[in-house]
Length: 41
Image 1: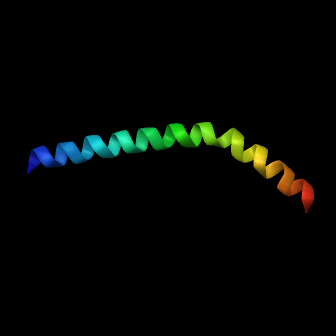
Image 2: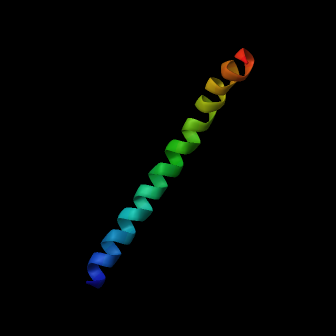
Image 3: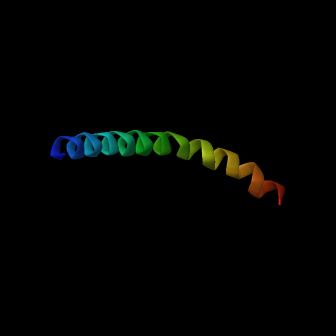
């Protein structure tokens, strides 16, 4: 049971790590997309 917990914890850490990386790389793209939207209104 404790082994499953550690596996799940490692999986969550990996998931969160990749999520943070994708968000970090997504941030400039989002601001780039947000610029025309704010320009239009």
